[in-house]
Length: 347
Image 1 (cartoon, one colour):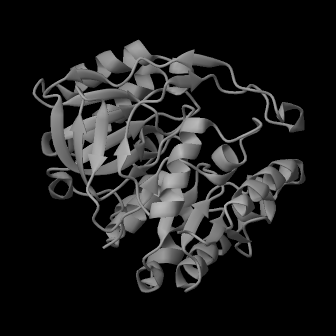
Image 2 (cartoon, helix red, strand yellow):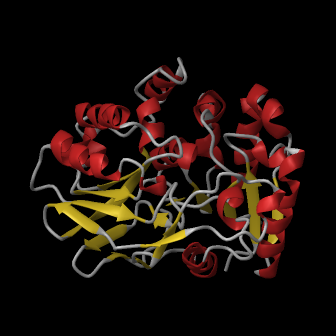
Image 3 (tube, rainbow, N blue to C red):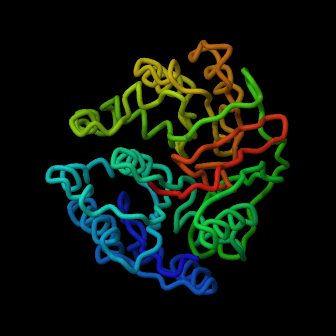
């Protein structure tokens, strides 16, 4: 059972802005109802400008959270777009390697890069939810499907099975205090869709936001990001992908089909699709470009025998499950489930 939670802001400092205080209050009350002791790390609430100017402080928070023997779970406040800037402060002198310990690490979006950092050091992590986006959801309660997986993680330390949600929700157009108690518009889910390949496949899952992965190879957003990611060997090489299952989900930017194709092309050039045993793809936010993405996945990957399972409730489209990375998984499209072994979540 998770008792002590440390909240970190590894990307955006949004959690520290005054206009987000009402949301923090919502989230803290919900966590406290679970009997949790919640600690914001020293720099987590210093705001957007400060954390933008001080990536080393964001890195310090992560290191301290891992070193704290009382912390059971490290929960990311939200994503962003520049957590790669923590790399020198975490890897130049083996800082993260020397600090990392057996804790639950949960986050998504730009946090994809942090997941790859921790994978490099042998720690299995959990992808799919964050504090501001999920625990602080403006509806009267956490979204039921999201809540189900969060409760399983904090009570058991892992996730045993993922099945489709019954409904998906349109994204809010506003996030201010006027949205408190306002329900999200919902639509019926049709379940996981097998685009090609065997309905049953297995492996250990790794991946995350395709937009963050794109930025690891393209300098369009951050000029130095590809260079730094290459210097520190953050993206796994082809051999590390052998037998794994790749998870892909797209961001709130709703990348155009052209950019989605470029993202897939980068992964293909790295040999990922020749190595993995299958691909899992999250539902796009508001189902934007969904049909185009399906066609691109099939055409760019160009391996008809490689299983591709589409429309998972993971990442940027609400509601969100939690996906364990590095744990043996069996995907069964016919039974509409992904089952995980009960081995320890961390090595």
